Amino acid sequence: MRYLLPLLLLTLLCSCGPAQNGATDKERPKPNILFIMSDDHAQRAISAYTDELIQTPNLDRIANEGMLFRNSFVTNSICAPSRAAIMTGKYSHLNGKIDNLSPFNPNQWTFTEELHDAGYRTSLIGKHHLQALPRGFDEFHGLIGQGSYYSPVFVHNGDTLDAVEGYTSTVITDYALAELKHSAADTSGQPFCMLYWHKAPHRNWMPDTSDLPGLLDKKYPIPANLRDEYKGRRAAEHADMRIADMFTSHDLKVTGDYQNPDPGTGGAGFITNPNFDQVKNFAYQMSRLTPAQQKAWEPFLKRVGEEWLDVKGTDRELEWRYQRYMQDYLASVKSVDDNVGRVLDYLDESGLDENTIVIYTSDQGFYLGEHGWYDKRFMYEESHRTPLMIRFPAAVAAGSSTGELVLNIDLGSTLLDYAGVTPPADVQGQSLRPILEGRNPEDWREDIYYRYYQQMNSYHRVARHEGVRGDRYKLIHFTEPGFEGYELYDLEEDPSEMHNRIDDPELEAVKTKLMERLGEQRVALKVVD
Ligand code: CA
Picture 1 (cartoon, helix red, strand yellow):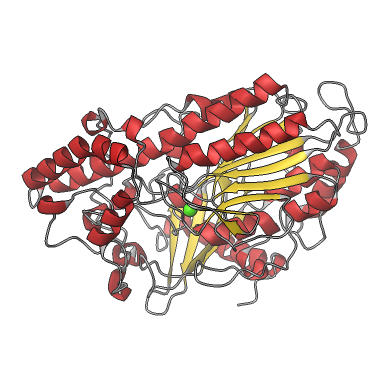
Picture 2 (cartoon, rainbow, N blue to C red):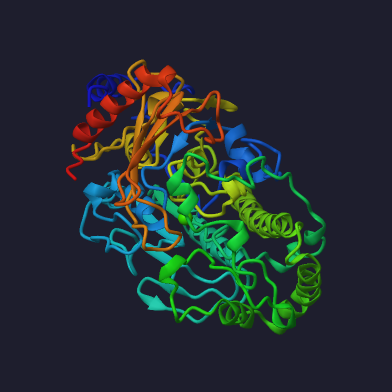
């Protein structure tokens, strides 16, 4: 870790100095922390990054009043492992949660328990996806597993509650607001750290009833590589995550008499769960709606079915599937944006906004039709990236942005830095504080390591791989038996990663350098297999 020592010194020097408002850390009460995370939210679906797909005025407030990270990435692009990396500040090979199927050791260090021990009131509201009742929280209102979009069931401090009538993004936010109100009324001065973690926009993207009218008239730009033929990219060719193969019922909301007898693989590949019936599953999800909610869905489902009968088997089918997917995905994003707006408004009203660090991120990015895909897992840009915006009026300039390479494992170290707590030496994340405060450290990391573990014979059939990404070039090493090989991309000339340049003599020196850096990163990060 040749970058670590100078960074550490810089951080130590800088954290003693005055903040931008002139108050030192010692004079200022410890900051509150509101850590907002959504599930599978691509950068391209936030207007602070680009407004080509959706307007997200509330999420944009966090960037406009704080810092936007243009190059933020995950260490392993899949749900539970990413959450474990965030909580522990360590890569998957050290925290043990390498894929969605492996267990998470609940007895290991987490940044939230450290904050709890440092006197913070800690709470987790929403989707956690690691274990039933995590350690170190004063208040836990968590969905069970993936949770449901409608009538969600929560565990509250160990007790399973009755299903709550309503839409998941709204219900999670109601609990979050109740917890914030508790802290606002607390006169003891105890700081809080709240993890406010949304389920949306995770598959199967069921919109709120209020967003259904007009939804089917919305049309979105079609990615140039929607019909990717995966030339020179064997693992991509064999992945099972194409929009063309989505479940028609569970994913696209084609119901009843309209149902196609050939529903697609749904990404389950050759290990399709024999107990999973996509038609029955969607019917179950719909059965969770109240009669009034079901009535609101009726005209929507009728039109979806009629459209499906019109396009199925034609050359218009793929583009229809893409639009159908985007309509629901982006409506789910809108529910997050609307509800984050409620929370930001409350911070303003209660006066908590000035001394509260607000983070918005996702557990990873997602494909929105690029390469013909939905889902994540690959080290290609759309799922390697994750959104990140941080607002802290006391120290971070409004409207600032950075292109430094940052990782999800950095978040815990950053928050502990602001809380005046030193993380254990084996934590691999680095505090983003120098970047947030505009000090642009010269010795910041120049490239990042990535590793995906879930095997080919699992959901979506993505071959195991690792890799290293610098500012311009990316090397991916596929290690799955039968898929071994390297891919090399010039992200400046080929941002969509369509041209694998691994055998291009022009990039020979780049290849050699990245091979060397991959080896160095493995040693520095204690990767042993
Ligand atoms: Ca996820």
